[in-house]
Amino acid sequence: MGAILAAAGSAVGLGNIWRFPYETGNSGGAAFILIYIACILFFGLPVMIAEFTIGRHSRANTARAYQILAPGTQWRWVGRWGVLTGFCILGYYTVVAGWCLEYVIDSATNAFANKVSADYVEMFNSFVSNPWKPAVLMTLFMLATHFIITKGVQKGIERSAKILMPVLFILLLFLAVCSITLPGASAGIDFLLKPDFSKVNADVFLSALGQTFYSLSLGMGCLCTYASYFRADTKLPNTALSIASIDSLVAILAGFIIFPAAFAVGINPDAGPSLIFITLPNVFTQAFGDIPFIATALSLMFYILLSLAALTSTISMHEVVTLYLHEEFNLTRKKAAGIVTIVCGFIGVLCALSFGPLKEYTFFGKNLFDMFDFVTAKLMLPIGGFFIAIFTGWFLDHKVLRSELSPCRTLHPYIYRAIIIILRYVAPAGIAMVFLNELGLLS
Ligand code: TRP
Image (cartoon, rainbow, N blue to C red):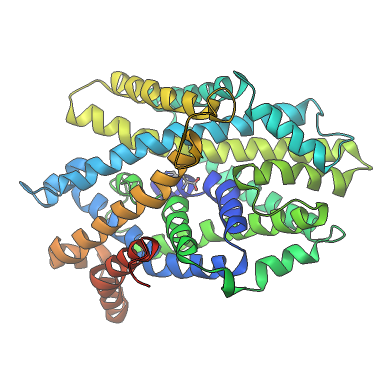
């Protein structure tokens, strides 16, 4: 149960509440969401089942898992690729987690009171371009992750996730109601529910694919590592379905908070990574402007819960990389964790400052932060997922697959066949097509 909760904790995080709305906003709304849901069904779920299978059967860290299941082959590079991806995501993910900490402080000091929408935009911009604050808060968050990884208090986090996640969920539900009832919110609801396929292009498909892997923590061996702690009789397909459902529900709820409010106060939905930070304070102040105490309490609670949701996600990434260094290079856990924290912290500082002092350093028109986001979510994770699907569908012994997918032979044979067909053909071909389409080779 602990391991399953931890996997859910890993999946639910900034990816759902921060990244999903901003990708949806960039990609035009409802049509993106439909494509995203299709991606979850055809790529996310099967790859999650594949990661679970690899992890539970090998009972090892993600790189070793391939050596155990396919000894002497090059498949171990899929594991190593995952570790590299983990390094890169953790580096810039903690930057956004640091922004959440800033918003915890702002809530506690009542900084949102008596302001209007334009002020929140200004507040965000001046904060992220500050020459040191974002880097310090990011470092703090990284150290908190480091502390939990080295002190081995993950169990405590898992247990608290059991309470925190439902509380976060209820709060999101409540905020969604507040947002939907703001005057002028209906344009936001249309944006979420009325698909406009004329805006769908190759980029939208790639965004949806990337968001699927990102939000479900797939493609880098994260859930594979957690599955190595699952019980032998845990039903993998059912567990995958539950985690994917919870994760998507949280993301969609976040959409129902952000877009009605954004349209109500006139914020462009394609504001990018700043979207939730410039939109949400409006919900608190507009809905509860007359009762400032409630506005403060709600926003404080929200940003604390969001930071904790981010923490269960950073722990999962840190753990994958730490475990790899610890087991493969015979380092002590402490040393391994230290290396991860320092290297990722370095990436994090650079990304944290890429809206301020380092904003001149751009690649293909993107600053460092956006670059890391793009390369990890839209390239590295889908590539990892592609190979995980191929490995499980084509190379893994079918006896192993059958016994892992249905240890008690309770899985319906049709569902089993469907999973195999998707892993063998649909997922690899689909992912490849999204890439080819993006490169303009399909049109
Ligand atoms: N899924 C997490 C989120 O939504 C982020 C995350 C944690 C992640 N572990 C991962 C993303 C592994 C990709 C791979 O916030």
